[in-house]
Image (spheres, rainbow, N blue to C red):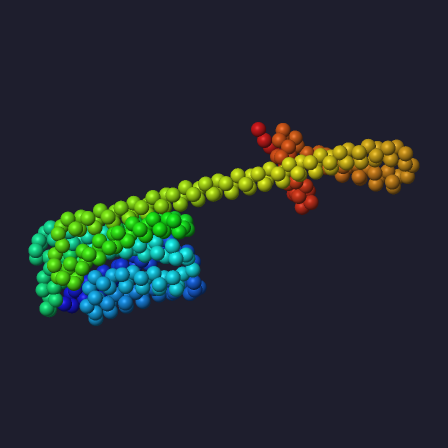
Length: 319
């Protein structure tokens, strides 16, 4: 029995590790600042699974208890929406339990036939080889899902969660029936039942991928709309700046003419120097590059003004 206890600990630790990794990808808002709180749900869930497995006779009935407990624990430790947390648990449960166990038990039953379930210390348990095959399949499945979830930045909405949960509940119900056979009745299920579980699980994953792509497209559309809005705002801003520039240019042109008249009429040298200084400032303002684009002219003129104020040499070379 000690061998099965070690295997159970190993498989449960693997399951918690994958749940932790998936939560990093999908849950971005921890409720507490201390990093250790990110692993609290997994540690607590590990204890719950161990107690329900070795100290109760619930069998397959423990599975919904474990899933609900996981959702509650994660909601306590994360601020993310309940839709996000439910999706994390559905993905984790499918990838770490339903798919690997269905494939693993199918392969070992195909090899050992009716000897898949054997007596161990008065209990009927699946052969240890089945657990090892499941362990290896979990590694592969976990790696594949991590590749899918990489750079996942989307928020799961109610409709997306509803579609995925409806698909998951079908998978979950069929899986519990299969587990009930060997956990509660100590009987083998037919090979076709494991093929069925695998197929339905793949349907759920395809549903998730479809929702993920839909969210990506929605995000792209919203991003494009935001970029268009920003461009419109910038265009309106520069249009207003252009009107201001035209008014200022007209004012400076009139000022230049007035200064010329004053210079001709004044007889004071001091006043003449002041007028020349003002003429130079007006000339500096009027001296800027014409690119053929009014908006670009405004940008360059503003940059040139800031550089002059900071005594920075400003030059432009363009083709």
